[in-house]
Image (cartoon, rainbow, N blue to C red; front, side):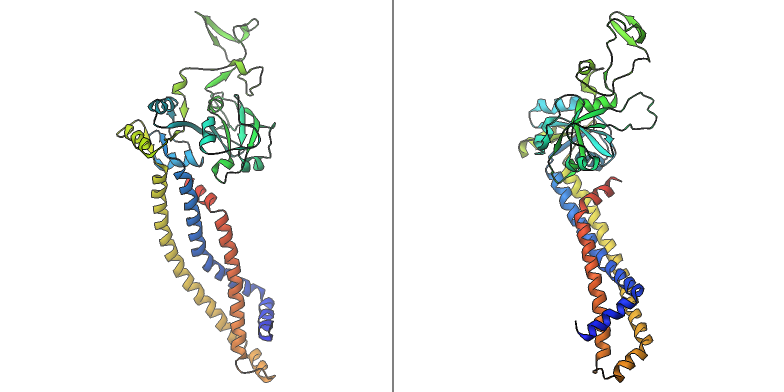
Length: 392
C-alpha cells in the first residue's frame, strides 16, 4: 500500500461513523436499481418456468391470478372450490390427464397439498428417502419443508385448524410421514403432500368412528330407523388413521361433489390443449387458464412498475451523490491545517488531491462491495420474495 493510500485508509478508519454513513448511502444508491432489476428478472424466470411446465388449470370463476398462484405456488388464499367431478369430466374427454389439487390446510406453516400419484409423475418428483403415500393419513414432505419441520420417515405431522374454535367439530389430523422428496428447486420443496381423500378427511368430509351397529354402541346412537343410524354428540371422530380404524372411514354424500382448489390438465400435444380449451369456451361455471399467459400479464405490470421505481431511485441517487460530494468538500475545508502540514514537511505537489482521491476511491470501492453482496442475496432469494409479495 502506498503512503497516500495508507493515509487515506487511516483517516477513514479514524472517522468510522462518517465513513460508514457514506459507504451505506453509496451502496444503497448502487443496490436499489441493480437489486430491483435482478430481483424482478430472476423471479420472472422462476415464475415462467413453473407456469410453462403446467399447460392448463381449471377452476371456478374468479381471479385468474389467485387461481394460478394457489394451484402452482400454494401461496395465495384458497379460491372458490370446483367439484371433484371435473376431474372425471376431463378424463372422459381423453384430451388430457387431469390431476386434482386440494390446497386449503397447513401444518407447521407449510401447505398441505391433496392430490394423486399422477402429480408426482407430471412434476417429475422423486422420493429421496422412504416412499410415497399409499393409504389414508399418510404424507410425503418436500425437501425444504422436512428440514424446516425437522421430520423424517416414521414421524408424524398434525394439520393446523383453520380457526382457533372450530364449531363444525373438524379435528386436526395426525398424519404419518412416509417419505421425503428429493429437492426439486421449486414450490414443491416447501409443501406437504397427501392423497386428496386425506385432505377431505382434514376438512371433515370423510369420517371415521366406532361401529354404531355393533353391540354396546347404544350410548352413541340418537335414533335407528329403517336401517339408518343417527349418531349423537357423544361419538368422537378419529383424529388419527391407524390400521385398526382405517376401514371405518367412509364418505358422506356424492364424492363427485367434494371440493377441490383446482384441476391441473396435462394434454399430450398442442392440438389436445386447444380442443380442451374450446370445450370451456363461454362457460360461466368454470374457467380454464394457461398459467404462462396469466403470469406474463402479471409480470408485464411488474415490469411497468419497475421502470417507474427505477426512475424515482435515479433522482434519489443524484441527490445522494450531491450530498456525498458536499461532505468531501466540507471535510477538505476543515482539514486545511492538516494539508498545510503535509506541504511543510515536503509532500510532493498534488499529494492533497491524491489523498482526497484515494479516500473517495476507498469509500466507493467499499460501497460497491456491499452493494454486490446485497445483489447476490437478492438474486438468491428472488423467487421466494416475489411469490410472497404477489400472494399478499
